[in-house]
Image 1 (cartoon, helix red, strand yellow):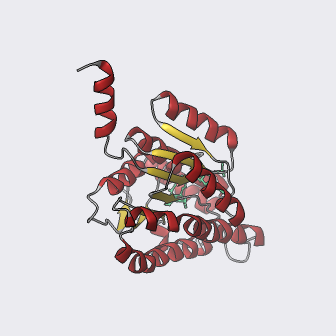
Image 2 (cartoon, protein in one colour):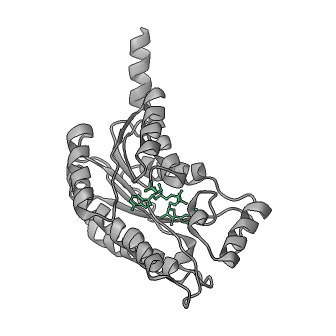
Image 3 (cartoon, protein in one colour):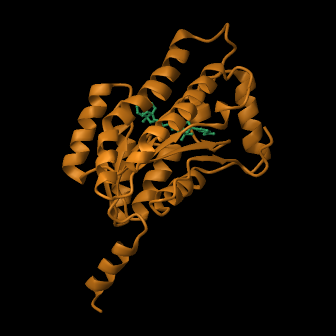
Length: 264
Ligand SMILES: NC(=O)c1ccc[n+]([C@@H]2O[C@H](COP(=O)([O-])OP(=O)(O)OC[C@H]3O[C@@H](n4cnc5c(N)ncnc54)[C@H](OP(=O)(O)O)[C@@H]3O)[C@@H](O)[C@H]2O)c1
């Protein structure tokens, strides 16, 4: 077998070869790691977030490693921008069959201190941003499934969706929305062959706590990171890749992923 033959063989046997993925929140943390992992397993990956420099650096890293990535700087709160991104991705990478609607933000405050901007930001990004993403890409997922291809819609919720953490009221509410909306969406999309999965992580070491300015919440998260072996973004990325690589008739619908020692 020639060198070229070997390369082709390897590419074809990558578990996600032929898949076209969209990852929102790809400029850092869970999204960045997931984009890199999906690309390493053969998917072409569209990278969405606002920080263009971070997306460009990630796209270059993926390309250097032999993968395919397209940086599409997008604010997912802007519905028209997400629709335009979907058109560009279809034209440049082909029909999307994997969507990881992951971009999110967390603010934590007592309700009497919660600045309007903070609660509005969480609702605009964690709820509206996810809906904009779903709205723009669901037709492509349904089309992929109709062609007999695997089709995955994955959302990032949180254990905060179902736990009662003081001062996390709006963040928890947005994640509760994501978990329940995804469950009900699955009822609608399952007969069309589109798998819907919600991933609910516990504590992951990312930039997320940097937006939190409540001292108690900051201490809670800093203590967890110092005291236990928390999750890394790559742990969640491996989970997303595993879900996407499951046989077409298998839908891992709801996954909670926790650091082993996390007790809250
Ligand atoms: N870390 C945890 O412990 C944890 C636990 C459970 C769930 N989660 C969830 O995991 C998801 C990813 O968070 P992370 O922990 O990886 O934190 P992160 O590193 O802060 O990632 C958040 C991502 O969202 C992007 N983003 C923010 N605003 C955006 C906008 N308007 N449009 C497009 N992209 C936007 C950010 O990029 P730009 O700033 O460049 O736009 C960034 O790439 C979130 O939904 C979060 O709620 C995290």
